[in-house]
Image (cartoon, rainbow, N blue to C red; front, side, top):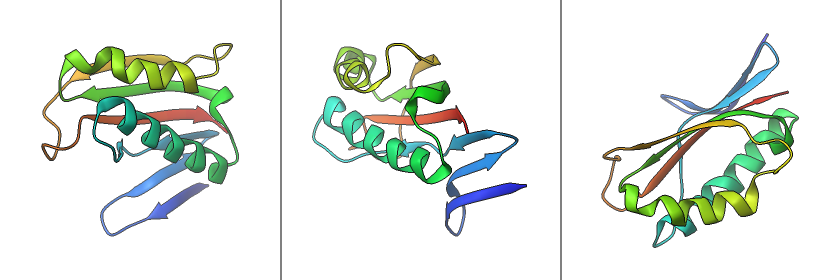
Length: 112
């Protein structure tokens, strides 16, 4: 069985299948990478809760940064949020994001 969370016209915000929830690439609001990351992770918490899980069940994360110089700023928000006893595998990539104001995009998978 597949559960689609917050489906839209083109994508859903998350999909639950085979005991795993995977989010779409999530972007946030804020004037810098740290603020955007905090906003993204708050959205992740809400999606995980809607899927019936939480950040202690993270499996993987992919982080895209507009500028790798924002790595430390993103990590300040990440480190304050992530469960240190249950860290996921993670990749961080520098990439041109959809609009110039976006500095961070994150996709998460977690066990349900």
